[in-house]
Amino acid sequence: MNGVREVAVISGKGGTGKTTITASLAMLMREGVVVDADVDAPNLHILLQPHVEEEHRFMGGFVAEIDPDLCESCGRCHELCRFGAIVPPKGEGAYQVDPVACDGCGLCQLACPTEAVRMVQKEVGWWYRSNTERGPFFHALLRPGEDNSGKLVTQIRTAAQEFAKEKGLKRILVDGPPGIGCPVISSLTGVDAALVVVEPTPSGVHDARRVVELTNSFNLELYLLVNRFDINEQIAEEIEYWAKEQGIGLAGRIPLDPRIPQLLSEGKTPLEAGGEVRATLEGLYQKLFDQKGR
Amino acid sequence: MRITVASGKGGAGKTSVAVSLALAAKRESLLVDCDVEEPNAALLLGAEPLKSESATIPVPEVNEEICTFCKECSKACRFHAIMILPHKAVVFDKMCHGCGVCSFVCPENAITEVPREIGKIVWGEAKGVRLLEGRLNVGEAMAPPLIRQVKAKMEESEPPLVILDAPPGVSCPFVETVKGSQFILFVVEPTPFGYHDFELSSRVVVELGIPWGVLANKCVKGESEGIVEKMEELCSSKGGTMLGKLPFSLYVARGYSKGDPMVVADPSLEPLFSQVLDRIQEKASRGEAR
View (cartoon, rainbow over the protein chains, first blue to last red):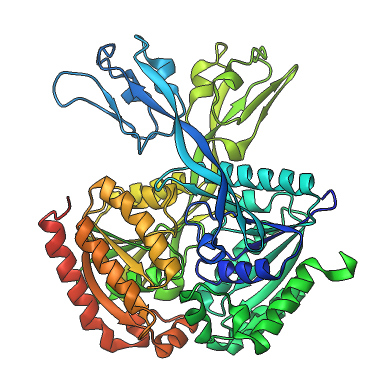
């Protein structure tokens, strides 16, 4: 897109190694921007050690608030609310909103005969433009428990794309979240390619298939890498066979190597394990970013 | 009694622990898979689906014969789910929260709500454990509406013990799952990533005021010790309970890779899970949380 190649790393299942692999790719990348789109539980900053240059508030959806002085306890809001977010008073007194349950739809405000309800926009997180030893890094943190993660992912990806364009950078690497829901969808819209990191277990395969099904709605190149493949080589082969049949590019295999968690605990990436692990990661980078003279 | 098994970071062993607890509970229990985006409990339990029903949310259908294209609905919709063009009403189904605002404001009564399927609710059973699973349709963006419906179904015939398998993460799907639980068991891998996400999720449960505890999983001699200490400190400072430390076991990992939960891969773990359940019951009934 516009001379900038954007690649997202996804998995379906959590804990397959997305962030570890993304950090390794980030270390190999030149002229690129890195984005941590797992805004709910971001981890990439732990390895990339960013210096924050800009911090921004992120405003999310709305939450209803009832003014107890205006509330006449008619209960209309409670009748209509579909999210169980209106709490009736125990005896007399005003109705109250449960902000955790509140969906922010505003039906209570529309229905209230005394205009006792106001809708307040929530500050639900922060996003950052930072610098790392390897270049610019966009990341965010959604306040624990909040929603609108998809919107926050879109925000940092847009900021990264604009930054890349402005600075003439050619690549954007996105560390995606687990699952198939809104933050994953927001991580995939408009990317050129996605890498699925799969673990060779029944759960890993089940989840990878669902996220691959999700990618069918997008026009993108798809690649697959089997992480910790030697936990079950039979399943590793089966998933690779399936991937080939689906037209998914095979991007390599990484073994369960005890040096990797050791390196991670020291804040280093698996690249430092050298040998075949490093070679696989370098090959992966090539495949995702440097093929055909990209 | 509802126990939610959560983790913050994915891949810590939530589902394996949840299934293992359900198998260890030698009493009538129900396992509820709330990880509706990627439900795995059925796989680990070895449960075949017995009954499946459609989970729907109401979305607007505009009768264009009655509609005057006044745009009141699109102005009132906070989710950009309905757009009114000069002679056409367009509904973006997947953005719709099913809140009912549009039909409420329509001055012509031109909007009816029709059910749209977002996923399935599936009953299963295996090895003496009943399973209730929510399975979000691929392409649906929002997990919480389906999680709510799964929990409502759970309430229709709730046994004395319910174990909920939560989704990974710390945001709305996780919160939707843990609301209403009497205890939250975090399964945490003692790595820098695992600890980071666990700390984030502990903030939510402390705010919600629900008693909680931790099971450290896949502990490796040397590397993990510092982080296990941090976990213990977090427990003491925030009112949680350290309930156990499971070592990393290649044996359990390979068993898992064949689809076995912990207690099936290593039956010697069963007494530990029974003990964890007993301690949780004890903590929850004392309502231990600040």
